[in-house]
Length: 165
Image (tube, one colour):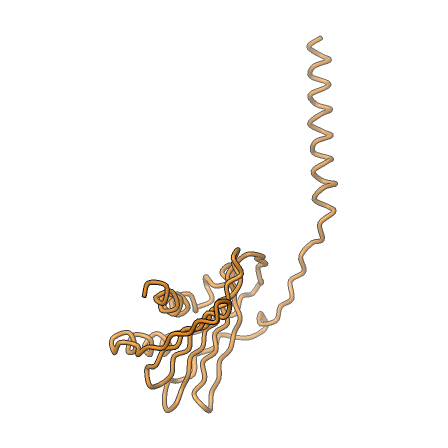
C-alpha cells in the first residue's frame, strides 16, 4: 500500500510539473526592444536662459496620468489629465535651487537590458533650454541605476504635493 501511495504521489508531482510547463509555455516570451540601450551616458541640459522641465507620470494599477511642468521663472504647474484639474504655484527658492543643482549633477545611464513591467509607473522626462534638449521615457524597474532616480523622485514628490493641498 505504501509503495502505491508513493507511486501515486510521484505521478501527481510529475503531472503537476508538466502542467506548469504547458501552462507557462502558452504565454509569449516578452521581447525586449533596446530603444535607448545603445546610447551612452548623457548629462542634462544646462538650466540657463529660458528653460523648462516637464515630467509625466502615467500607468500604475489605477492608470494615472499626471504632468509636472517647471519653468525658469520657478512657476510650477501640476496637471491631472484624468480629472482635468490644474494647479499652478511658485516653487519655493530653496526647492528651486535644489532642483537646479540636482539637474546639473545628474548623468543619465541608459539601461543595458530593458526590464518589462506591466503595472509600473512610467515617467517621461523632458528638459530643454532652447539649444539643448534631453528626453527619456523610463519605468520603475529601469529607473534604479539610470542616474535619474534622485531627480525623478524629487519631481514625483513635487507632483504628489498637489494631493496634500
